Length: 336
Image (cartoon, rainbow, N blue to C red; front, side, top):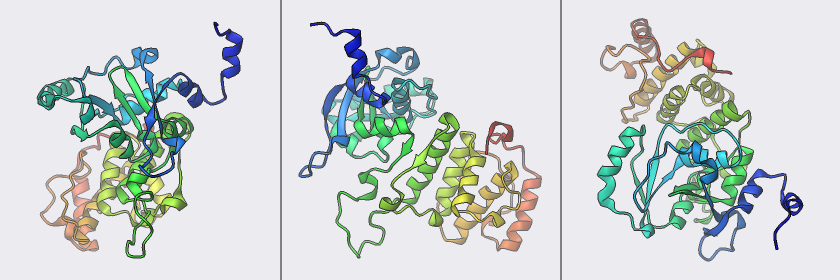
């Protein structure tokens, strides 16, 4: 019996996510073995034919290889009826159970060079392993062939612009509470910075974005190491949200405004970049972080980062006076 248009209308919901799920095929569940089945971890598969024009730039990958990350998130957004930005990076995963030919890696590298930047190819034993190891619920998405796999909570959080960490990043579901594990259940600094960047991007693109489960996962924005701040600042400026990123660090108390007398300006970003390198050396962090932008003169004296605060200020002022224009920071393009 054919379904009438009236019947179809009655089945529509106020949730775009539920409408997409209704058009999809059930593909499994990735709840931990031994745990009760969590419906939020249901997996679905849907054809990408309806957004073919939006994804025509994607390369055709060999068997066993699929696309994750921002590109897969953008496809999910398009299915929700929203205009999604094209991701800068191409994240590729090899899924063992899909029998990938690992000799194709060199061929893939050539494809990637023609399609922009690419992250290193990661390996997962199965789709279940893949979905069980994502950092945020909105990253529980995967493009394979002409289909998109996604979890129920991924599409629900994407529709509501929620950034929420998963159990794989916090250990909440995998390890019992213990007084011996000081940071049990806490979100790590790298994830804190990534969450901030995603929130800023969501607000800029869609006017909405929130970080959830703050109490459950013990978010601590006061103790982010200088290295992670530097990494976040570098990514933010490349995405032209550097000022907004610094503003959020001020609001959260991660950075003291008194340390940045230039305030929310491109010069303030330059100052923060210099300070993070100074703090890393001061605190014994031996990682050599190099910013992708020319925040200060590259001819600064050896050892400038480890100078005391007074000497640092003198050297920093001289380095800035000789620096070229910051290429990735355009104040007029940013709203804060």
